[in-house]
Image 1 (cartoon, helix red, strand yellow):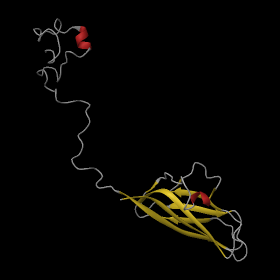
Image 2 (cartoon, helix red, strand yellow):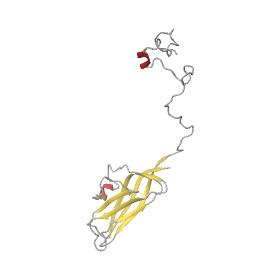
Image 3 (cartoon, one colour):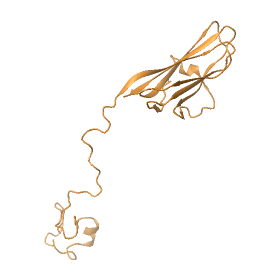
Image 4 (cartoon, rainbow, N blue to C red):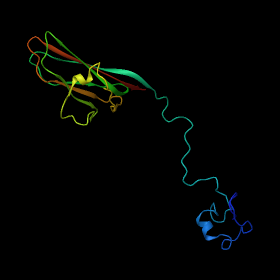
Length: 189
């Protein structure tokens, strides 16, 4: 066994294990024996025992694209003396990652004293707010609000997305409050 090329050392001591292999040189890897015992030196120099497997020639996940898109949720309606929570469930047919929710609220037949609330958004069983104990005003999600982008979980295909809406006070006689909900995000195909 000799020293590896390019390193300094005594060149005439190739076969001597005791005299030619100084202890410090062996500790610092200056003289390395590769291969099984009895094999010629450098028999396994091209194999790395802990190397990573080679990457596949073709990609594992073929042609994944992300398109800017929207997903509509429909609308909820509160009529006179109705203050119950309304739940909308949408089940996307392709994976979708929501980034911006828009809630458009209108009152027909007069004005409403009630405040429309977003109680919670769930993707599958995961709530999309750190705390769902208190509702958020729908005005946070108005079409002209700023800094309203969110990073939501990916709703994989056939995963239910549930939005729960509420109102703080029932509309008066002859008043109907409507909240239409939509979401911008990435359609993952």
